[in-house]
Length: 297
Image (cartoon, rainbow, N blue to C red; front, side, top):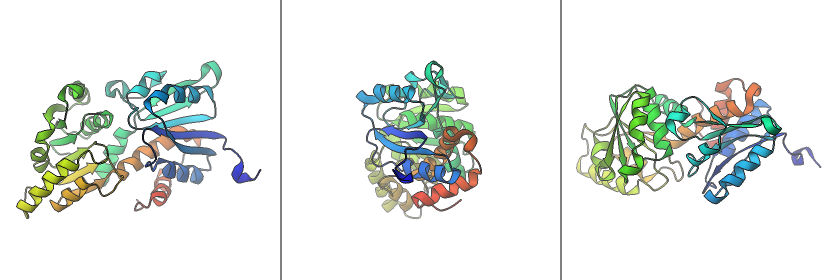
């Protein structure tokens, strides 16, 4: 057996369904190589009916250091945790599982690094804290977006959803993080986006294509309009640019690619999974940027 064939000492991975598009393996592998942390990282396609089995496997095998969690498992995975990190109880969703200990003392802890990812991505684009913002979608990433906006000091958040009843938990979440959340019908999204300084789309790939068409029509009829939107963070990064991002650019707006959020939430996961091996965050971020073709910081 060659060195290349020798199994890594530790394991980590990302679970979701579908998951083949994920760039997390490239990001994490680059970071662990730089850190000299002997840990593999793979994408694990996990349909909902296999989530319990996957988490039981992570709990049973001490080689597992953690999981990144993406759609559609951010809420359901929380139910399997022994404990949670700061702010998770209010959010009700996680995107990170840290596994520690052995045997009966082994524990799974849930974290949400999406909040840090959103804040840092928006800040990196040079965005100050506007008085209000718009969030598209009402799922687990929308919860993180509301928490991130609260952390940034945004006083009012309008959340555009297709089912208001399914997003009602975002209202008390807003109260908990210091911002006022107003649920709006998705039909209002084009109008609200056109007047907003900051929009965060948490919709899955192609989920905003209809809205993009509306905005594209607005761009054709209002070229040069000074009320053009300013900043859009579109968390969907495959395919890129999304139709929404293209329409936003046509309106003169600034785009924050979803890859920015992915990068910044991933570096926090690397910190949690690698523990004492973590060092030199700036260098870690740079090698992760190189891995996915993003500009160095």
